[in-house]
Length: 474
Image 1 (tube, one colour):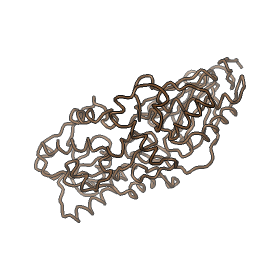
Image 2: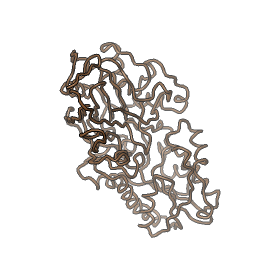
Image 3: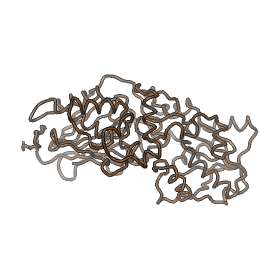
Image 4: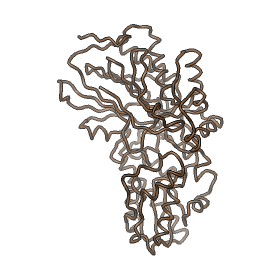
């Protein structure tokens, strides 16, 4: 039985002291991992200090969330708690906390707990397999279904928005809706970029959603090329995320699809690297343009999105350096003009290349001859068409509309102060003041599966946990 976490900091420090899982010994011994971002961290910190009398050691909102949960459990005043107490505690947490969170926790001597925010913004699901060591089943909880596939788990199902799940050490599984009804709105950027293509999130295949994005983008590209009387010789994806969409786009337009960039797989994803200079330097280390595919051609580059413009500018220049006559950049996502406050490390608005710029100005900024964006309605339909039961997505990075509410200019300004590259470089692990005006915890690394938890039933055990982690054999 255990939990793990793959992370990078959305704000604040990447110091090892902030690496998850977090742990508190009182009450009951809780290990905790969180994927997401809280938007009312400042008020929660004041509550922790003035009323709950709990000390926060780091600048991570994940530790705040853990202590809110611990405080709710402590309210029971019991030496031994049961499942009803845990569900009640999670319900109390959801009344206090605002933002996005998919969480796993482990109670010493008890079992694994999972819960998801009422809007279901960040993904979370569970699966099981026959245990190799007992007559029961092993259970796994993770952010993406692909980790279940890799571990031989099956029967994947999503944790519902506002739902809590308890898996005891004896193998019992209990599920309960613990929040008030809210609008289900998963983050659409998971499908655009973050999730692995072989994952299924909330009943939607990431792979098929990207195929649909390519088909929809082809219609927009066709319209713009006809309007401007421009011809294209070849479609080339920016590795890796855009490959699926680029292939469908090329097929729809009847154009050749070629792999023009060779990727160095020993360089990580530049999107999550801390600092503009590091991101810029690593683009050329990561990709090498092949003159064979670019020389004397009008190239249509396809990327999943254009965020800071750092990668796009370097890649376009690389294409021109090896002889491309012209470079058009097509983005599977609409212009990103607003900050993400729900657990993805979008930079401050002024660092977003599309913020305050027209499409023509973006093209000039990144050195492209033309930029073509997917429309927001087409993006939404590409994803929703695979699960019509989902009526709404969080599209805040494109629209500036935040599904949870409570995100005003003051909050965004505070968030930008700690998300700025220079702030990330300088901020040290420290006091509560480091968290004022922000909600930056550890979030998922793109293409990875986390937070993850797995537990299998022991030979014996009961469904209660003692205040001092006592255990009674059944």
